[in-house]
Image (cartoon, one colour):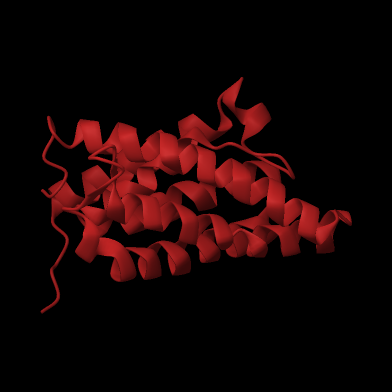
Length: 170
């Protein structure tokens, strides 16, 4: 059964995408959001997709728009496409663990597994930077993966906390 998006859904998708863009391109956050060493605060919004799949669209659009500002159309398709594929796949693989917690209730199990999975997916960005800017592939994969993991772990705590006060399922 396919759900049709209503006006409220479209507004929420747009707002979340806009917040993603602002958290990525606004100084001083923009200085740590791109390149071989990156920590995107906006990546915490990936976890919203565990509550409602419409946020996959939000995060993907936000990523594509933010990437257009830095590396142009190539990064719109590589970074945006990577986000769409790996966010969708990660939600599908790990959503079943969302009610479970690790380390004595410290972190959501689904979010922790997703953070590892999505961080490993940074090989796509490493390959893009290697081709476009001759960055060393494995070092770039390591640095972007570590930055992604750190931002996602931060986001796991933030979105889990926010979800206690705001119904992200709607």
